[in-house]
Image (cartoon, rainbow, N blue to C red; front, side, top):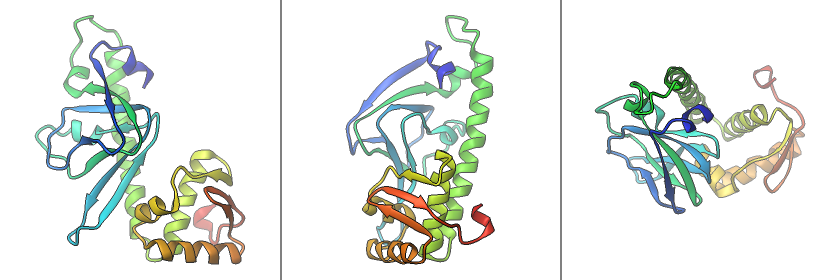
Length: 206
């Protein structure tokens, strides 16, 4: 993100909690970095149920794949979940030198390619989570992801139970029941948003 901040062809945008940053069906020629706050990308299924596809915190990027696909419309809505500040970068501006003849453009382009690859891997992981057949496996998938990010078996998750249920695409009551069972089975311990992984049930989560 730092290399993009050095370029003059960026702008700072501010969004209130609940405000739409990118709307489904719209084109976008910019991508952005979250400087403050957090966002979620969402879509609705055929029954009108909202599904959270991704959640992005401070330091994360949004709109990367869409900006790199000129003429494509967004399949998702990106919404601020808190008051949020975003540094927006015009995709076409990183392809050509800026008016300041910025020497960072080659590095910016390389970093953007890396961002595209990372977003592709994130979506792959997200699909894996949604395709898990049981509530327990969905929970384990999510906790494993956070554990890897924090590089620790004890951590706080950035969401409450309602949002966690929406993110995992399960009923809130089913999530609570399974968490209690996992605690009883000695897999995890938790207090509100703080979790401790006591034992992974299989080698896939080592």
